[in-house]
Length: 403
Image (cartoon, rainbow, N blue to C red; front, side):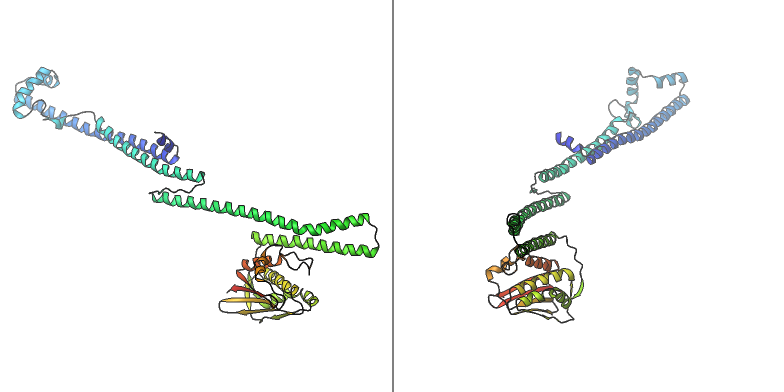
């Protein structure tokens, strides 16, 4: 009973039950109306038959009309017994059922039977609803308890609904794990960032204390200000590069994909690096055919190539950094190759870790994010990055983009 009441709390089941009750009432009324018409026809037949009998008695016998009318209106039991004795030879006896074709009774029982049949159908429908909503209620409880429904539901639609509920639960669990992992990465990122910014901030604090407590001449003051400038530049670059990497990893960068010249991209990427290469006695060579084109975002790919060429220049003394490209029916490759100091095999996986840099002794402004940015941009543009390096011989970085 309790399950039925809970089922009727659902609007669909309540509407079904209400319509079933209304259908019972309509069925009862229609049956009563139809059987009432049939009863009136029977009454008419009985009346016509009685009139025919009275007319025949009046015509064929000498019985006065008053006695004939009194005989038909008489309901005395003794007279009925006498009539049974007279007509017994023709099959009209009490209890034989002869003459039932003229019998008349109020047709309530057939109407009740029809209505009861409809009501029984309604009860069966409600039972089906109870079964249906019981399965839905189990799915709801499993969703509330954050547990997958393991019960095998025979109803196809319920089975499909259970699959969708299980899928939503799995997606929710994956989202929770992803958010948890992102929180850990964010905590690690903040820890690394604070560690990186701590050194230049400490330098600025120390210099500021020296300014306040030690008098100095102009040349000495300029020397300390130059140190402050280096610290400020490092902090500025650290914030700028960190923000850029955060945007890339968060997927908020809107890339504008268009067909661009690979030579033009590499030329723009190297424009600001010739002076850095010259300081190390290194030359930058572009060996890219003008006709090679690539579907990409030129601005961001130029950023990635610039970071890779800058790293190559920083680690190459009196050598050459070569940027080349080739195109096959399958892919387009952009290669940055140097003959510098190379990278040990155990250090290659560390190259893409945030704030990992081996250039701090060569360039105090290096923050160790350039390789991470270059890899993220390359992958966002549908490419892959491959590194091949030998200590003492040089490094080759290959960007591969499927056509």
